[in-house]
Image (cartoon, rainbow over all chains, first blue to last red; front, top):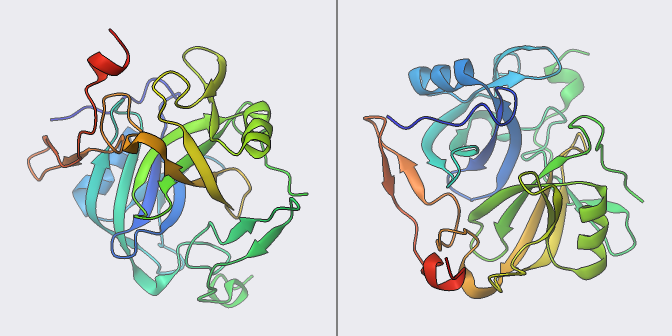
Length: 126
Length: 126
């Protein structure tokens, strides 16, 4: 059984969620040992919320869960890639398919290049 | 000019290097403000080495530099994607195309799925 190196980052390592079909990077979040085990057990990407200091079952509120199709582990065992099927089509809490929906332009400003799938004010009832 | 949020992670944020043609995730490393500015100025992915505590011009030793073709910024401004042209074809110091060259199997062991491009004992003259 492979062991991830949770020590380096105070118990947390980054997990990159990538669309298993398109290869688009959807988001980056952090996992601790508990969320790693929960991901393996449940088959759904489960992170650790740094802001809320709790286990974060991605999509629990919005319904946009991530079915983990494949897991890749890096050479240092301190980063993982979750290749996922993004239920609902949007990973970002702002309603975009990917959290990386902005591209840096030559002039240092950004432009939106991502596709918006839902209106967050409706989904999260803010 | 967009400002990245370097405060959250003690001056460092993760940067995901992704092959701009295949979409493969090649590696994850960290950047601080200095390496971010150097990346923008030089056009080559430049990280901050946590182990050596110094600016890390990726590929300086191996020649496998990363030409940054596009930069994506996430919703929280605390993670970036560098879409790169990986010179030499290998991002990993172990000689693989991607640092994520191992896949987790059902039994908890890993199998090598990545392509080895060079022999690190030759390139780094260990």
